[in-house]
Amino acid sequence: MSPSWNRTSPAIVGAATALAVLTACGGGGNGSNDSTDGTKPVSITFWGWAKGSKEVVDAFNASHKNIRVKYEEIPSGNAGGYAKISNAVKAGNAPDLVSIEYPMLPEFVSQGSVQDISGHLTDDVKKKFLPQAVELTTLGGKNWAVPFDASPQAFYYRKDLFTKYGVEVPTTWDEFREAAEKVKKADGKARIGTFFPDDPTTFQAMAWQAGAQWFKAEGDTWKVDTSDAATTKVAAYWQGLLDDGLVRNNASFSPEWTNSLKSGGTIGYLGASWGAGVLTGTLPEQSGKWAVAPMPSWDGKPASGMLGGSTFAVTKGSDKTGAAVEFAKWMTTTEDGIKARIASGTSSAFPAAAELRPAAKQAFDATYYGGQDIYQVFEDAGASISPHWAWGPSTGTTNTVIKDEFGRVARGGATIADAVRAGHDATVSELKKRGLKVEG
Image (cartoon, rainbow, N blue to C red; front, side, top):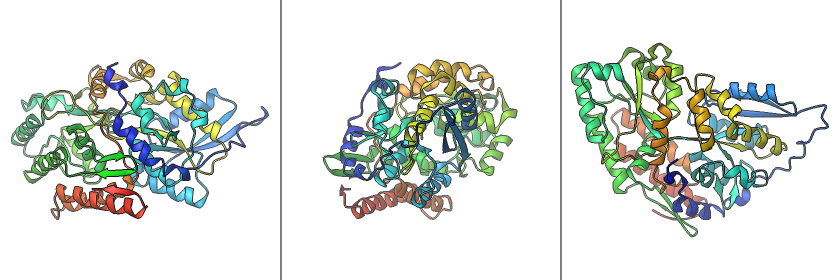
């Protein structure tokens, strides 16, 4: 494992300091109903959307008698899942355990929607995970979630069509544009990839990869900067691709996006490690035609951001904290847990627990990718993730505004730079409204 995976981000530590003032409102579980007399198991409810979750729950229930898990699949976070969780917490009928991606965890902590689970995560458990993953789930010196996966970026491409069109796999963003032009010239109906107007997180991962740092905490002050050189460069680059019709403009995982992949109208996908499972589950008939490459970078050297990545948090109000964390730890730190998820055939999870990656690689059927060792691609990409990115406490506001503005970009009513600026302004306004010190 590369040493860079073990680097602690000073930005993340600073963010934790600024968030300390917010974490006082986080919930605290008493676990009063955790115990059982051996005749009746503790029943907990779990909401999530990650591929393979049902299979993981089934495997856990089949192998454990003291805890029973009831699983409900909800829409992915940005597609309504987070709103559903927030509303359930406010109404007092939330499940015990929920899936929350790293970018959104500070938001849920600041709202007091999840519990401090520090007392249930011992050092011997935490040391199993990437230090970055632990830092991203530690705010104000308290642990708020169990990390599950890391999510380095990756580029998926149709190797058969790249060969047919004489296109080399790009290693730089300049080469990516050249490849996009070549694909369009070879087949006027084909494009190399897609700009997702509904998904700010993909753009944020691109900015992260380029070296941007949107949120920085110094003492009790948040510094917000989305107009830095790196973000400006990424925004201008993607605006150029859109203006010249070199990429598609479809909502992520929409029927339009899927049908374009099925027809060969889109022959590449800029995603993350978990995207491998998305393709195998979405396009099973294209087995053997896809390959995975490192994300193009600006200078050709390995570089990656994180796109998503999941954690498991116990909601405010749950009185089954111990049982919920026990299940979360089983999902994230045991070979049985990771094998159950990946053996579903729909997940390519890249565990934050490094010792589970060999098991994940073994459980993943690489036939779809022609036997390629895609987990080595993920490992190398993960080693190149910049440690200088941190998430702010109002990601929901930031992303909602950018998503709305990206919709205008798709209709030609705004630019990507306009959208990012609107997200910046809304973020600063929201933080000030919460009484926080802000520079930006």
